[in-house]
Length: 332
Image (cartoon, rainbow, N blue to C red; front, side, top):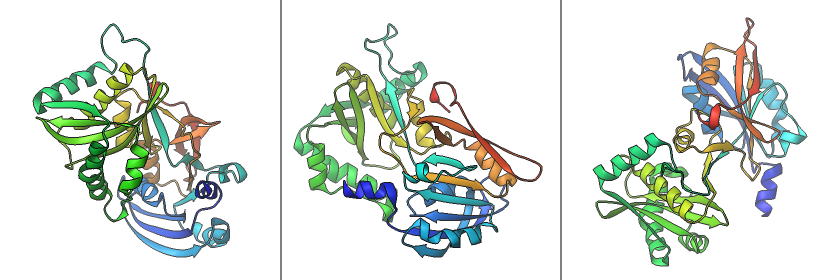
């Protein structure tokens, strides 16, 4: 709890990093300056750069203490990228800049009764899942035995996390995993009778949350994720669930994970716990910068409601941005 409260105010460390490379769209030279704890540097970098070099220019105990160093270098770059603790958004508003939460949440609302169509999900998705189940001989079961949870951690969850995130992997230790997983249901996906993936489900009242995921191969066979998630949603409806929390995603309508969840009809909402605020200040509205903002619409919050940023450049290469309603149904 103390760590969570501390994170609301100050990051554990702060860095000023110079980024220089080529724009993700167009390939023109691009320069940026980043300041923050480093937790979201890769996300911000990937929005704008195809390739780039990093050079740390300053390291201080807090963002406040390197403000002067950051300001001195900002005049020579196209972009300034900041990562700020949650409460700074209220205490020090970033006026004139594009601001977004580090993460947004996606939820799926379920009807009380099964629709007359017999479908809980979009028709094309249900058809796709049936095809994959037939071709890959998929099946899904739901268990809660401690032995199954232990096997899931050792054979699926840990290897998957280590494979996906490499040196940056943060694996929940087995004792904590088993303690937190007690009382949760494990959904297991089988291909031709062989267990290949799993997902922990936590139900509280009429809400069910997707939890830790693991699989024994990367990439998985075609349609594995869709089949497992669709089965979990049907299971949730049978248990009287009205809201399925499909998890947090990056605040970008072009993000692959966000688009995947949108296929199920999940809508975008703010997370329950305050997130770090990411600030994008466009110093020069170059074609590469503006294409990145146009092709990867970013999600900001207005009074806690997710909206999408629309940016435009004038003849003097100045950028202006405004928040607009999300596309229909919150889908990209």
